[in-house]
Image (cartoon, rainbow, N blue to C red; front, side, top):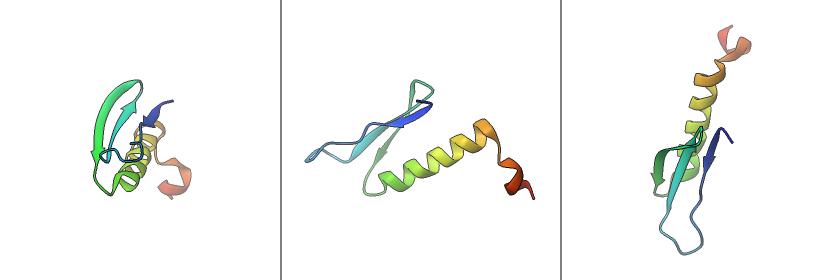
Length: 57
């Protein structure tokens, strides 16, 4: 995977390491892990592939 997340298990502290291109890029913490990861994915896509034709118009 180009970007991935390792989610915490049941009863574990809500921390989730994020890997980008095979290297640890960040550790997300707290109740907003899902939203923070979604933003990281969107940012990664934009950086890697650009905004696309529709966004440029």
